[in-house]
Image 1 (tube, helix red, strand yellow):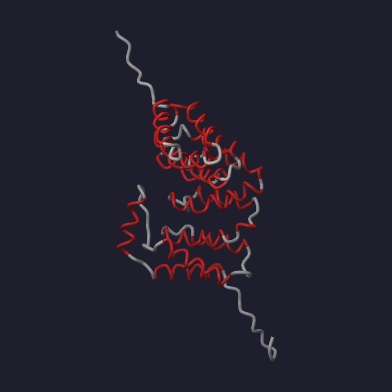
Image 2 (tube, helix red, strand yellow):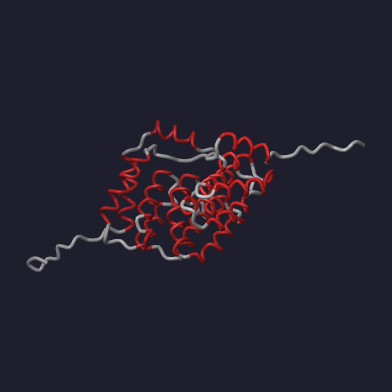
Amino acid sequence: MADGINLKKPVPSPDEIAHKAVALIKSKANPERAVGAQRYFKDQISSYGLTSDEVRDIAKNLYADVRGVWSVRDAIDFCEILLPNKYLDVKGTATLIFLRYADDFEPAVFSLVKKWLSRDYLDNWASVDVLCPDALGGLLEKHPSLVQKIKDWTASPNRWVKRASAVSFIKLARRGKFLDPAYAVAKRLLSVEDDLIEKANGWLLREAGKTDMPRLEKFLLVHGAKIPRTTLRYAIERFPEPKRRNILERTKPSTSWPSRP
């Protein structure tokens, strides 16, 4: 306060930062690179063509505008504005700023993220994989009671909810934590015929195997031919080549021959 004038800088609102974010992203749009980005996705996506580094820089600079003054609620409101935007770069910027508040997430965020997934706000594998390992993985670690809830996500009709059930355990399983629920989720997803789920499940199994390879091998051999080959090939990537060949052979689906009339 100087001469009766309040010099305190006003706190930028979520709407103001969202508007600034979109303007910054559009200013760096690269149509040629946007077309190239499509090759990483089987489903149609929309992109302004920013690189990952450019998105991270924008998120970092925007966060500097609100650091220390925004609450988790503000970050949620910010995401509610930007996540419905169809552009991958916009979703990514919103997610990266939201994750800055991960240490303060409460269990209510768990249901909130499921709502975003169910409404297809995170409608591609990249958006799901940026948000869920940190946001939901951290919540699962702090609040183990949420584990049963995320197991139930495996039965969701929404593919992004199902993918999230697997990738949320990625960083935990990599550290040898929550392996029992990680394998339980993996088992439930074996029957899902969806390339994006099969790959996510294989990724989860590969990470789970990093600290306990014998357990991963046993799981693969027990479930054998029930495991989609895409899932299996992801899961065995860390095994030595002879072991990979052996597991592939021992889990090969058997050929059923028709009986003679």
